[in-house]
Image (cartoon, rainbow, N blue to C red):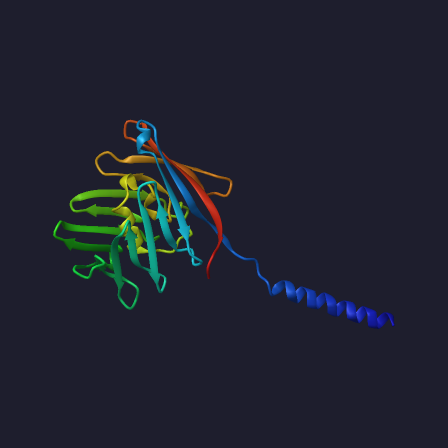
Length: 240
């Protein structure tokens, strides 16, 4: 009788161990839920940015006091951006490269060229030529807006505010040309240490206990802090 009990006990132990292995630990990551921009010299410029995501951790909304951005995806690529009723559409090649930008009404479509060796997207409109290029980590390193250049210096690692966000070149393009002083941090997966051309900001990043950037202070060349970003996060399940 003792032998039978021992055998059944062994079976229970084996089955229990098997059940534990069937349920691997869920991987999670941090995504910005809110970014507060606080200007030291002129608080009237202060702003709050709220972020919303879908089940694939793609940004579906960015809401501020004055603007509402809504994003729609097709095959996990940004296809439509609605900014307070103004529509932009984004079209892609079969390989997923951004190919053109439309105005939503179908009356104008702007082709987008891609230089693979420099990870550079460029286009030309009646206003002139513009481009945006990325590092090998998919962080923005240069924005050219019809003659105005904005260099961006980043770290080599994916340790930025949006380190867990999947790369969306169309979304990065839209954000880089939409927000004053790049207050949503260029959707960068890497930490940004400086940005600007003739009078670049130096950026001091402070991290929390989870190694997320909790605040970023933008400092002028003369050493005067201009504004500060305070970032709140939510922990989300990472998609495969």
